Image (tube, rainbow, N blue to C red):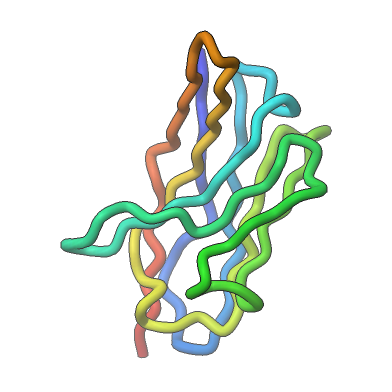
Length: 120
């Protein structure tokens, strides 16, 4: 059974930091690129950051570049999102995602999300 379990969300003041974690199980984690998405109230879910299966390549939404860092530990089947200099616009539910396409089939797994609220 595939599971992605996010943790680390919470309430933080503007300018503060949070570190999200996503623990994966039930699939071959080290073979999957991993992503963090977020969804703000009334808005569509958007890609925040992604990391290749080996961790050597990363990509970020323009709105979070420099402030957020995605990383992974394949030995622990865990992906992280370090969020610094948080802004109220960063508020939303953050989702962990594993997605891989073999050409014949697409595998797409989601976590349940963790709430991040940036407010004074």
